Picture 1 (cartoon, one colour):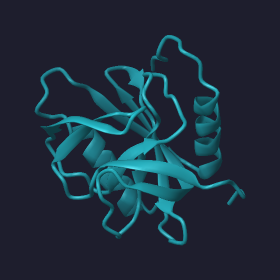
Picture 2 (spheres, helix red, strand yellow; picture 1 turned 90 degrees about the vertical axis):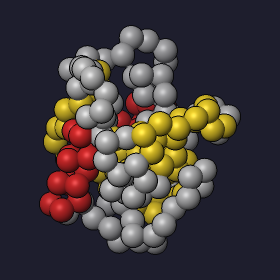
Picture 3 (cartoon, rainbow, N blue to C red; picture 1 turned 180 degrees about the vertical axis):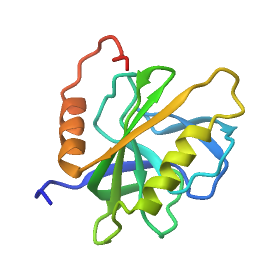
Length: 158
């Protein structure tokens, strides 16, 4: 594993919740919530100090058995990247674990995440989400580095 500084992840949605919280990501202010078709298998949020192709912060699943609360900021180690496309636009997810923990990307974790992202918006007509490969920490770190140096531009298409 590369020796990198901790990743700070703002938790939007707790593991087991079937609701998606919507935050103003620059101010950390809750704007509202909406139901989802599947409960989150792991805590989900965004990486502070990044900007994805869609203009939001990079999305991140935090792989842990520990209960994390909405609004909590967690220092994490990067463990991988899950490719994802939402309505044809890149919307990859960083995969991380809290510092000091040993969670890994096992086949069971990968299956749970892929199942979730493909079906989380089944209740939204016309919404198409496609899961791709699970890649290592080095690829995730490159993705994070590019999002930290991101400039406004057109979203990338798959």
